[in-house]
Length: 318
Image (cartoon, rainbow, N blue to C red):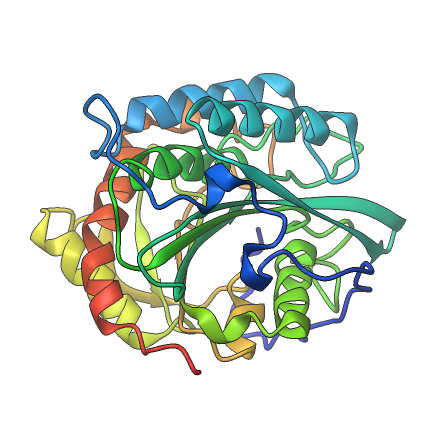
């Protein structure tokens, strides 16, 4: 994750793999994945920060998880096992990224929760950690928190029927291999947008909710000034209504992150992120500096804001 402020990010193209993309008529999805969501047993409709924290711990235990490494493959397997145990189908979106370190194999993970209509809300974050050769960086907050958050969100959103279709995406390659400049960053989100544009699938995407670095023990989330204003307004109003105004603070920042390719493509987007995190990109981004409570706060706000987001999101183009 980068701290850069007020920098216009250029959206690079990443070579597309051959073949039709799976969005088309749900091609490539199993019969189970195409079924309308159904209620499930147990109290599954409330976000559980402790569950998310357990997944975060499991990811941290793997160690550093940079793109193309055996460890990120292990992280993918862990995420896939947890989602499969919920009865959800995980679709892999593999691609090759041209990086300053050469060509690197990367994989986005996608779960679709069909709604009554095909228009979609997208919930996303990244699951990779930044590559370092001089330190052990396990990315408890920067990488593990967003990945674990999405696993728990998938559990919650799959529990009951919903109007719009929900897609959840774990992006690979958010981090820069060398420096956050040029095209050395946001590999997975840029690839996803390019593939969607090529398949004509962006027109059904009504909004993106991106989460990143949401487990800081001292959580302070500022509005990203580059995010879509009405999404910022709805999420911050929800936070205040829930009594979390001290966490979702009324102050602006501007962030380069995985929402930028979507914004550039015209998709309303919001980035929910805490950049006021002293251990950022240091060995101290570990379990001592994250908490289940912070995951709970963000989970409560996101889940509670979804009805308003659905109501206000512009109808997808025909």
